[in-house]
Amino acid sequence: MKRLIIGLAAMALLAGCSGVEKDARYETAIELRDAMTAAGYDCPSWDDFDTETTSFDSGHCLSDNRDQLRVYKTEQARSGDMDGLILGTQFAMVSTRVEMGLLVSNNWAIRAPKEEIPGLREKLGGFEPDLSDVRMPT
Image (cartoon, helix red, strand yellow):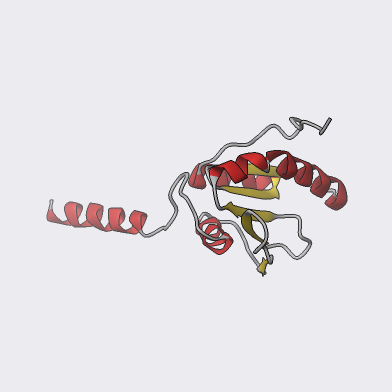
């Protein structure tokens, strides 16, 4: 019985060390990248974009720029950028000829190859917006 309790306590401790929490808020794109890699996403290289004049911090892991991570300063900034996120994802699919997906949460968004999105959503939370839902400016 004592071994069982110790084993369960060790499993709980290890589960808590993963550093991945569903729908967590992140301060930087690097923090989001770290959560993505803890969730199993491969990040072979990191390029942090200079975004001092924007409402978000961003970067990408793949050398062909098809993925992108954005962490917004406010939820309103994320909401205001949804059309841009969707258009950027559509453009990435055309330019790379790779099916892309988009995962969005309270203050962050991830564009990545479509096959990566379900695993990231399972561990990081968020939702997948309809990529055909773009309101063109009038």
